[in-house]
Length: 239
Image 1 (spheres, helix red, strand yellow):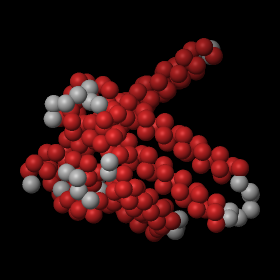
Image 2 (tube, rainbow, N blue to C red):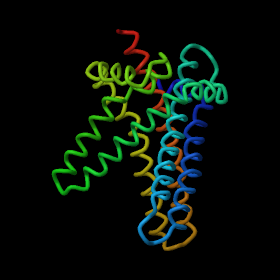
Image 3 (tube, rainbow, N blue to C red):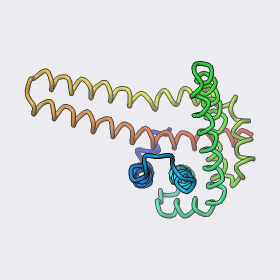
Image 4 (cartoon, rainbow, N blue to C red):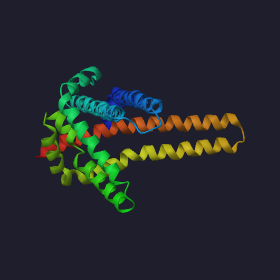
């Protein structure tokens, strides 16, 4: 169903492209800030600025995901996919999205610090990461579709975990399949070009593999957001 929605509404691929562009722009600015800084210990202002940049990246990605959920929800209700209107709809909830971005960023940073502890810390960090991702998988759709606050949306997402877990695993495998196939095909194309002992075929094979992987990642990101929205709507209707 998610692939069918994408086939009928190809404009939805614009959302991952815009999110990627925002990530590159904000992340590039943060990287330039780091490279321009002194090699000595960073000042308090630099640390605060870096933290604000990290939060801004998270908010930009959250806003893009929220806008796409709004667009997919509209498509499933029979409306055309509207990019600008979906971003405006998501931006109306900017306060709760900002709080959610701050919470998610803080949790991920804490998990990253936990993973620095040898062996045990890494295992616990991975377990917490998987648990957090599974528990909050449907939080954003709950916030955008039903207008819930982040606390109530997270509680509802956790409630839906057992009911939707098998479908999440099954859907994720289907979404990952084109990406895996594109990596294999792209690698084979590149190796065939290398084996020809000619620069032209090697470049052509590498370019074809890179384009194939880019298209697969773009489709995968779009279908993943569609799938999450569809899954929440189905689970919410069953409550």
